[in-house]
Structure formats: C-alpha cells, structure tokens
Image (cartoon, rainbow, N blue to C red):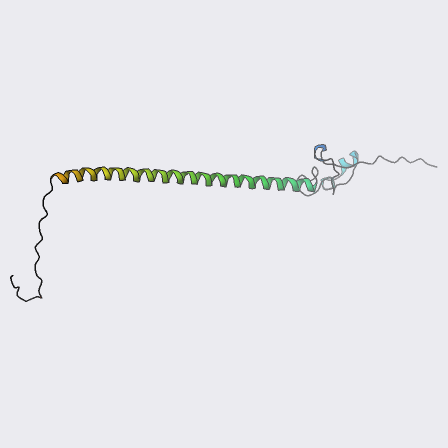
Length: 142
C-alpha cells in the first residue's frame, strides 16, 4: 500500500463579499500555484469586470447607469420647459404693461385734444356740391 496525499480543492474566484460573494461562472477553480502558472484566459471571462463581477452584477450596473442617465435627461428637459414657460410669462406680462402704458398715454392725449378743440371750435364749412354731367355736356345753373 502506498499513501497518496490529495491536494486541497480551491473554491475558485468569487464576487466581492459586499456584492453577495457568489462563485464566478466561466472561471476555473485553480489553486494558488496552478493559478500563477495558468494563462489569463483561464482566470477570467471575456466581459467587462471579467474576473471580478458576475454577469448579473455587470448587467445591473449597465442598467443602473442607463436609468440614471435617463433620469438626468428627463430632469433637464423639465427644467428647460419650466424656464421657457417662465420666460413666456414674463414676455406676455411685459407686453401687457407696454400696451397699458400706450393706452394710458393715448387716453391722456385724447383728453387734452378734446378739451382744446372744445374751446376753439369753428363751425364746419359747407361743402359745395356740383352736379356731374357726362363729358361734353353743358351744365345748367339753378
């Protein structure tokens, strides 16, 4: 009989403790000395955060980044809309004030002209009416 020593088995790479400490799929469970000698291809997977995060965590990060960006875009759009509405309101108010000012001035002027014309009113001259006749005809006097 010959005694054979079985080497301890490695657990293999896992995700960080904070992120659930799950086993990374697609990587080999190599012991330290074997992992040192193994190629990079055997120690990781071909995706972002290959030997660190699982595919679910990578997907969640991508989705989170997309949704956050969408929120920022919506927030920016709402802010722009509110700003344009505020500017429109200010423009309309300014236009209204300007028209009211114009109306007040014209009313004031009309009042002055009306008072002045009442003092120095002359009788209106009568217009002469001439009888119209066809070309070449002689006019008869009344």
